[in-house]
Length: 327
Image 1 (tube, rainbow, N blue to C red):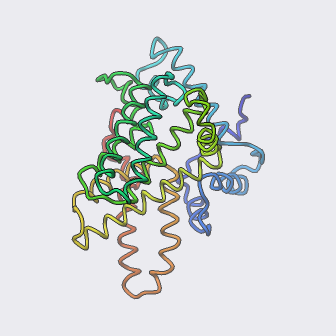
Image 2 (image 1 turned 180 degrees about the vertical axis):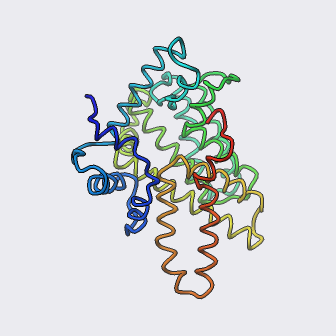
Image 3 (image 1 turned 90 degrees about the vertical axis):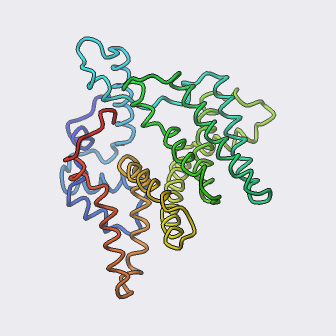
C-alpha cells in the first residue's frame, strides 16, 4: 500500500526539532520506545500536519519500506543504475530466519549453555562466570558466521554486521573477559541470547525437540512484540546502569580505569543508533535530576557531567567530523 504525502513527510521528519525535543523532555514519566511513537504522532498532528491519519502505524510503514528497499538492492546487487553507496544505503542486518537449521541448533546450544553457566555463577564461583562469557562469545560468533559466512575485506560484507545486534553483543561481552566478575554484566548477553533463541524457534519450531515444548512456549513469549520491546528496554537499562557502576568503581579504586572509558565509547555509539538506550538515559535523568537539584553543589556537578555526556553524542559536532566509510 502506497504511503500518502503526509505519511512520507512524517517518516522523513527531522526529530531533532527543538519543539519536539522540548515537548518530549517535559514528559514524565519518560515513555518507552513504543509509547514514544504515539507521542510523536500526537505532537506532529498538533504542530506540523493535522492531515496525518491518526491510525497510521509508522513502525509498520517503515518496516515495509525497508523490506522493499532490501528486495530492490538484492535484485540490482549494486549493478547498473545503482552506485555503490546507494546499493549499501539500504542494507539491514540479516534475520535469524536466514540461518540454516544446523547453524540454528548449534547457536541455540551455545546460547543455552551460556545462560545456564550464567545462572550457576553465584553458587559455583567465578570459573563459571568466565566460561559463560566465553560461551556467549562463541554463540554470537556462530550466529554471525551462519548469517554472513566467512569474513571478507569488503564494505558490503561489514556494513550489515556492524549494525547487527549479535555483533554489538559480541563486542560488549568481550570487553568484560579480562575484568573482574560482575553479576550485572551477565544479564546483558543473557537477554540478547534469550531474544535470539526466541527468534530462532519462531522461524523454525523444529530446531528444538518436541520434549522441550515448555521451553518453546517460554521463548516464543519473549519475542512477542510488546514483550520483546520490554526485554530490549530492560537490556538498555542494565547497560546504562553498568556505565554508572563502572564509573563509581573506578572513582573508588575498585576496578580498572580503562574499562569504563572503553565501555563509555561503546555506549556512545549505542546511544546514536539505539532508541532504547536513549530512553534509558532520559529515564535516569528524569529521576536523578530532581533529587540532585535539591542538594547544593551536587546539582551543578550533575549538570556538568550530563553536559559532557551529551557533547559526546551531539549530532551537530559529529557532522563536522569525517564519517566512517562503513557506517
